[in-house]
Image (cartoon, rainbow, N blue to C red):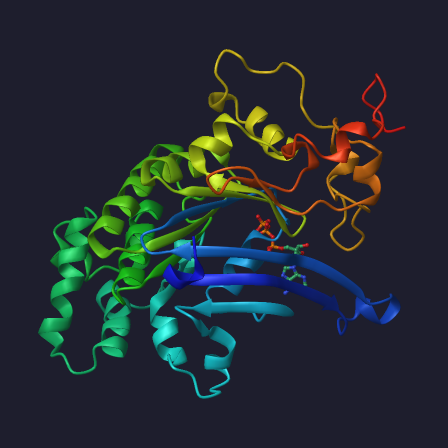
Length: 358
Ligand SMILES: Nc1ncnc2c1ncn2[C@@H]1O[C@H](COP(=O)(O)OP(=O)(O)OP(=O)(O)O)[C@@H](O)[C@H]1O
């Protein structure tokens, strides 16, 4: 996808955190966590991108960088061609930061903490309406709120708007948060583990709702999840993409069917293996990953960062870091194995018959 048609375009973005200042840090050396490390990604109109990876791999940090809530250490994030941080710093932007904020919304995992416990829902939902539509009368502002609450099944809406958050279930609260994010008519919603706290039975319902509203509003989603089956459900229904993160990098990205049916990166294969309902009868019996602790993001392995866990690692993987190799139709993987003619194939395996590193 070209960045011309992108809502948000991320170009070679890194976000590094240096721990210096806390009490414990007084007695230790400064450490740099490379939470996001040189990521490029475009999110287009009506796009759905599911971002998956294990805890601590940098999903939330990347998500926050994408919506302008985390300043990159290097690289650029643009909204419709406007550098978000130049807009934020008011360096003569073509698109003001207020417009970018309106367009890029976030839904968190815990809807309870996103809603003010002391405010009735109407008050909470009126806030974005007042902010973005200051010229409308109170009654006119209330109309879309009621209509949207009905649309997400919180009916009768007139009754729901008078409730406090604690008078709603977790699923109902998350619907209210979704409604609130949509009231500003955003171009992109970052849903950061937005369904993880819901009962399993409610997750599919919530994802269906998100997709239904996407059609209505033409919103794009960046859907962060550690659960491949949820990510697959949403991306597949939307005809979207999946991006797999490992230690601050996207290691595989592409249309959902291709990544699920034909994963190129050993880590994606391991995630797929660990999600049993994704495998058909042909499922592999052996875990396609070596069982070791997840490497430390402060002190990452040399070469390909995945090589200590990779059953297919060869000498070259220990020393050289692969770029994203794009095969076809935008399916890319940071693995030499994605390139049939790569010198990787002539390199010696570093995994012995017992699956241990030599
Ligand atoms: N403000 C911060 N200061 C220092 N380190 C941070 C900060 N925010 C995140 N990190 C570190 O950056 C790395 C990536 O964190 P991040 O929350 O982005 O991962 P994640 O994949 O979203 O994890 P989870 O699924 O557990 O939320 C982690 O090692 C985390 O400890």
